Length: 256
Ligand SMILES: [Mg+2]
Image (cartoon, rainbow, N blue to C red; front, side, top):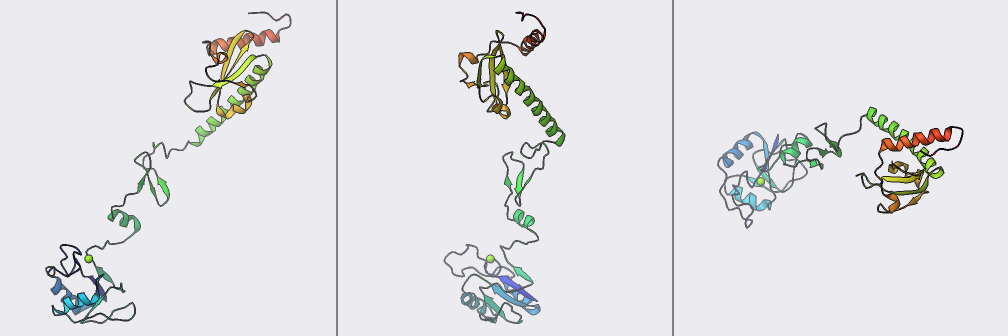
């Protein structure tokens, strides 16, 4: 077996870090004895970013037989220490800054690298996928199929209504104008105003149906023709029903 052993922080106490680049500290307690015991059992190399000659000299002064030259990626010789700045094959690496790796999740957590949080502050991105640990997360929430279908049917019904409203506005209506809806938070909503047999009528149009009323005059929200006169939905439809009956009944068109 071959064991790799770091130098600074494992053999050399390295209490002040790199400092001036010299080997300034004594060995860590147990380091020299530990190295000797390792050498009794295994091939050992010192793996350091220092100049290997500097480390070899220090170790030689403490009774070790060192060499700094070798061929290939393996070191199998027992009884003497190889000092190298290359990473050679080993069954184990003793390193004061090593992080044992068993998987990327474990390694990221050992390194204190947290996953990227999403805007909700709870959910995060992991390996390119969004992870939503709490089901009510507004970011991760996707509309359940039944609700999506109901919304589609609702929008479809509104589109049918809006087609007929546009037809009435263009046929029976007078002074039809389209203005932005100030009472809807979502952008793109509009109101179609027109006069129907002397009374103001108005309908909201979602941006989905803007194409149906694109041909009417568009005015700003403060245009006098686009001011709601306070009519309720109930009153509006009573007027519509009245007109429908009046138009469908033979005889002279009666004023209400
Ligand atoms: Mg070290």
